[in-house]
Length: 219
Length: 219
DNA sequence: TAAATAGTGTCTCTTAGACAATATTAT
DNA sequence: ATAATATTGTCTAAGAGACACTATTTA
Image (cartoon, rainbow over all chains, first blue to last red; front, side, top):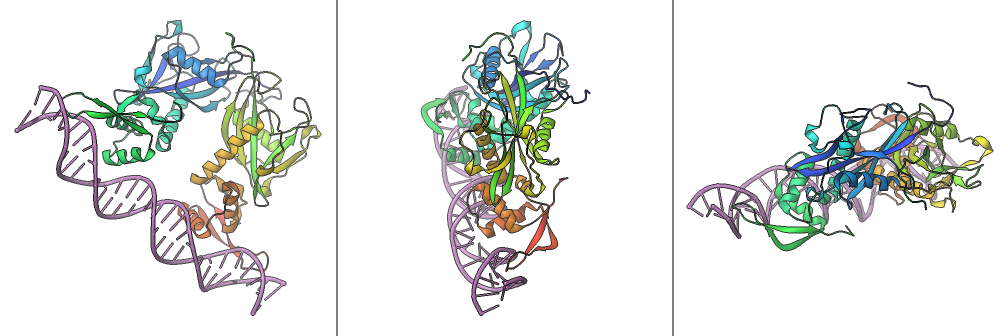
């Protein structure tokens, strides 16, 4: 490792985005396979250099849009990683964001550079990710688990209309454990953010579930 | 404002540190008066460019040490501010940290460049700070207020030995409201992090207070 | 003994967890 | 009628706020 010098470091800044969704009842995130060095062939989070005149969040939203086609999403700055040596190309600092999208809104497209892009259940991520992305993802999952307990971010993972059972599935996927149905419904009730609809989800041979929508400031 | 270009932005990265302490029963933070442009004469948080081979946290610790002479402190990354236009010198992104130190450990020295440095009660900050530092400080105070509720960060603002009344003073200074003495002591008791000492604080003409020290992982 | 601060316990309300039976639909 | 999922309430334990008196020291 290089010793600390007395001159300002010449740095570049990227943003990387942990894009979460719920798929098949499990928490998933989007990774792209790198088509170029370094870490060619490894899976990495969507991200890239910030452009002229672009705010950090705008850059994160741009990366997210390029990979999923989704524009209006919940996004939040996570942490900034800047250890020397985290990127073999030089001193590159990355501002990490995480975003939550409903599966039905995400149109994942094979990324630019003919690189693959796919969803991965967080419990089954590839062994070796590019850069320090494994650590960043750990932070993101931890943060999401913490925030779902005392905020309403969880609702961002659902389509506009959803049943209470679907909502519970999301919470269970993130908590990683089953929740008691009656306690869960009481808790949601107390949040006072659901609007009952005169619509029902009718699936197999069972009682249909009432649908709700999320009511909040603007989103 | 400049339109977003298609090329990576040429950026520089600084760290800025909100250094908190308790002085005269009030939450204070350290500001330095800028000796050079831009914002010459305005008050600003200690900070500066990161150096070669230095991690972000190392840079923050260095700035803190340069301003207060304190080395071992509680420090935590706060948020990264990178809007274009936040610094008139160009595209400068700052990674903000906040630190907590006990007043008895801080030896604030007149900063380099013959610039002034002094503590300010957060309720009486100068009207116009340099850059977007007012906003950064708002974030820091908010974060500290939130974290003191569910962590033990508050203990970092006290000397090694302290009485329960002194501890309560710290909590009240941060919460900004008086706390019930019995409820407060029960709450601290439940944390199970205080070691009672066979020493007493004897002040004026009143009953001496038992001293305690903070017991935790390493610090 | 007066002034000043330290130290201490109970009641109540709210919150969160554990826990099971009935309701409604399609087949 | 059966299978499948939705919907609903109570008891209990723990945590948090409101609240007032006694103890110990110095001047």
